[in-house]
Amino acid sequence: MSKQAVIKYGQSAIDALAACIAYLQEAEDYIDGKRASLPNAEPLLEARFPTSTILSASAIDRAKGVSWPTISAKISDSVATKHRYFDPWYFAVMLLLELPGGRFILAKSKHQEYAYAAYAGQTVQPNFYLRRIVVNTPSWADTKEGKHSDGAHYDYRRTTLHWISKNAVRTLGKPTRRKSSNRETAVKFAVELFEKQLIAHHSRNESGRTDKLPGLNLAALDYEKLLWVALYIADGMHEKYLRLRAGNV
Image 1 (cartoon, rainbow, N blue to C red):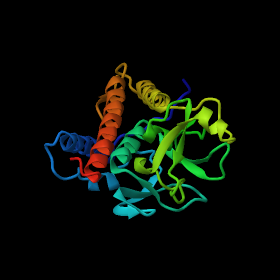
Image 2 (image 1 turned 30 degrees about the vertical axis):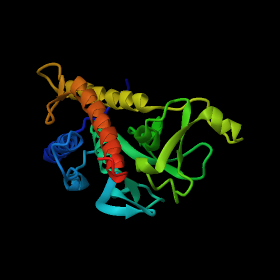
Image 3 (image 1 turned 135 degrees about the vertical axis):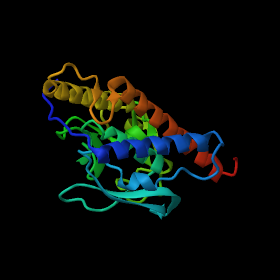
Image 4 (image 1 turned 90 degrees about the horizontal axis):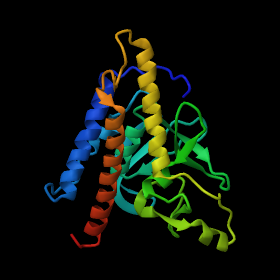
């Protein structure tokens, strides 16, 4: 692993972690039927970890012609300045991915003219497209927007997206990579960033090995578990709200 700059986790980072965990707890209660109202996303709007590139955010009820609980936020970029749209439940996952030094960038797809939100570390490569993380797209498939979606590179709400096999894409005569990243590779990358932070803090700690990040009191195994739990809950929120919208709950 390459040497990593030490990140100082102060009170704002502690508060951000607490906000994410509180949101996940409320979301779990909502999924289990213990809570009637949607989890409160307001604390997520200001919650940020030190290397975050997510700028201003607000909660809205409608975007791109789709009525849906939505967080509208900007991602830091020198050229692209428009808001992107996210499910609150996956926005919580985004915040947690940034915890160990991760950040979101706007990266151009190899075969597309648009810049899509992607998860990365201190450098642009490697990166992992957010749409694939949200939709849980398999490595042998591509993520596509619905037929009537407008400006898909701005909209990352799962209800506007789906995945399709790469073989089907090729049958349609469209180009695609042989294989792409999936959730597992993105989570693995985040955990590697976390472990780099442990090493960086260890080199500054004369008393011995650091197994937990100072300030956050979080071990690598705890962090990995938290990411998977957050993704599991986000998927559950998506399915629960879809059923609610369909009148089946």
